[in-house]
Length: 375
Image (tube, rainbow, N blue to C red; front, side, top):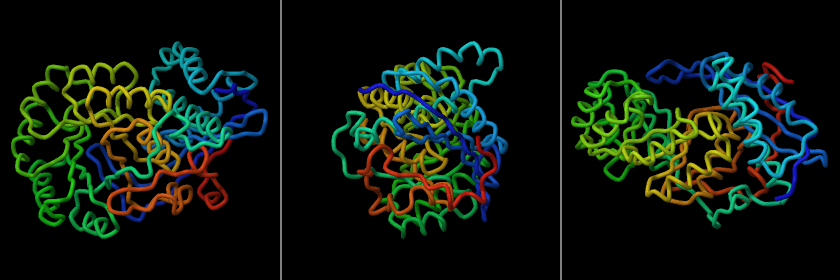
């Protein structure tokens, strides 16, 4: 792997309006923010990354500023590949994280820079990122439709089924009676062949999660995501896994060694790190390969802009296994303007881009009216 000599780092924040808010157990999304980072090498090569900033609402501008500020630490330095840059900058910021008490924003900023460096490196070598990461040739990956609201979800899901989706995830954790009724309506509407999963966003106690698992036994759910707090004791996760016939899933709110502990514990059958929330390509590829090697399904979490979607896709394609790519089917200019028609959903799958790096050359011109900050 050739060295990287960084000349400049830029960051941008955007906010895109929504016609219909998206409801989750912890709140409501009223716009779609996006924070991007661009890294330029001395030879003129460049790469783009996506910084997680969904929540809280002020996250996009703040985290874009972090990416610009801490990206300056990379300027003028030489690294032997993206992984070295990620590991070195992570070490340098350990004390700052303790000082500020902000591990989340710093982790998201590091992830965005890491994605940009991998995109740069793969582009410079003229290779699709998944192949640059050592993955086998793969033409398509399966997807599942995500972010389905609790308000008449079967209607939204049925429309997406007509567009080519075959797998669906419902947001639950509101009221158990309502949650179960929604899942039954989805099963009845979509048919027995549809893949249905659900996400509680850490809403329940152990007893509540057990109650739901028992009540949902006849619905043929592929997984139950984050039914407990991510920091719940290991004994509670083990007890729930033993009581539930539905496989348990989680990972979007984990970092670093927590994935090793979760894989070793065995309660989670579906491992779901978010490439923009922690670890970037460097960290997520390691977790993905460890999960697949342990017989788990690697299904990367995603609910951001277009570059985050492409990053998740390439890690999934490189890791192999039977995992699905989370695919947000709600209108989102931050995804649509960057991805375009690159990922059409046909019979539940999307093609793996064959262009260099992430597979796109971002054009920010159509997004300028929505820009809220730039370095």
